[in-house]
Length: 112
Image (cartoon, rainbow, N blue to C red; front, side, top):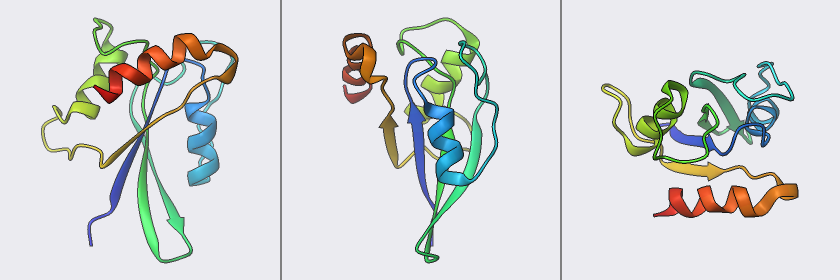
């Protein structure tokens, strides 16, 4: 059985890594400034002891139209442009509810 891949994406500092840690039991570094996650992190989440899901914590990005290396990593993984890696089965956009206007702009871009 193929493990379902779920990518967590969103703007920097919106809570992706905190959610990743909660879902996977990991202890990745969380900080109150951008740029902490600069590469893909992967962990497993087991649901009811029966099904495993691979959770991907990706670097924060404001747009897929970008030039920075960490944001390109997120874009390429989401679009399936990484050699030898399956495209995520599901992309979960994590947003900061205190700044919905900024975050929802990226959600619409991911959805397109």
